[in-house]
Amino acid sequence: MTYKIPFNKPYIIGSEIDYIKDAVERGQLSGNGYYTKKCQSYFEDRYGFKKCLLTHSGTAALEMAALLLNIQSGDEVILPSYTFVSTANAFILRGAKLRFADSEADHPNISVEEIERLVNDKTKAIVVVHYAGHAVDLDPILKLCNEKGVILIEDAAHAIDSTYKGRWLGGIGHLSAFSFHETKNIISGEGGMLVINDERFIERSEILWEKGTNRRAFERGEVAKYEWVDVGSSYLPSELTAAFLFAQLEHIEDIQKRRVEIWKNYHEAFSLISENYNFKLPVLKDYASVNGHFYYIVCQTTDIRKKLIDCLKNHGIMAVFHYQALHSSPYFSDKYIGPNLPNAIHFTECLLRLPSYYGLSGEDQDEVIDEAIKFII
Ligand SMILES: *Cc1c(COP(=O)(O)O)cnc(C)c1O
Image 1 (tube, protein in one colour):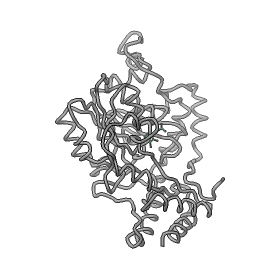
Image 2 (cartoon, helix red, strand yellow):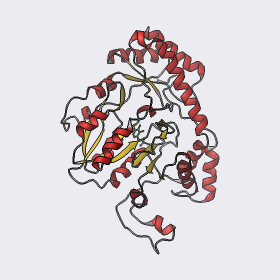
Image 3 (cartoon, protein in one colour):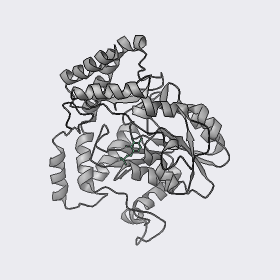
Image 4 (tube, protein in one colour):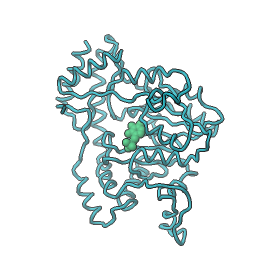
């Protein structure tokens, strides 16, 4: 079925094709060329990230982060259950023992008390996901990490251009991963980026990125030839992808402005009715900002959610649920030992995302709001 108003529609600026043409004419199609460097510098300058490496996906950036941890058997990684599979796969692939944490009661983000329950001498890393671009409360987690010598990794796939107490997300953890998948705010089809904020990881991250060679040091004239010096893999995006991404980056302020506006339109409209009708809206904590990644509501029951999805579908509107709590997934449920994680299950069953994309017209958004409100009241 095709929807009149889809959940997502990739926004194309138009100049992507010009930059791709330019990349072709420059003659280097493989990675780490002119546009890759331009994108990386853009992020380093705009957000003050210490070191950025483009990757071919957010998944690849998370896998690089996991490799950098040098996980040994018995090492544990704490992460939210309510997240995308890549957050978990990256670490289980390296042999880490996954310790799933519940969400907060009023927000899909990982709960700090849950982290405190799970942390122990074997904890190697804590991975947080800033759900829908809303910051996790990082200060108490950072304090814990410093006390215990644990690495903080931000899965910032949703979180571009968003802040925690005025600090840019992705710039706070020791390592962070972004995604430029076409469902995110800034896109390149598939694409991602590893951010290295802790200098201890910079040299090795470049080696892993260059398939386990010291090619970057060679390029800088620091060694006479480049050789196999560590493990590594293929993580670089091609210059064609980087050229596409750069065109998007040039318009980041315009894109963000419109996405935040769409988010606020939804929030204002639903705020008027949510209390009387027991629908929950995203809570906005005072330490977090809105980056307009997507808007969601939380229904009372999974049955009501299903009926609302169907009702919107009948009007040509696509609304979608989101993650399936990983601790109760087909792959992990028989490996999971621990308490029920009721909040993660609640968001699995009741959270619903509404159409959120740059090209959503005011008229179409009004229609989504009207139909949803008609259903609710
Ligand atoms: C999108 C996403 C990823 C993976 O990014 P890809 O670029 O699709 O590989 C990882 N974690 C979260 C939370 C995501 O939303």
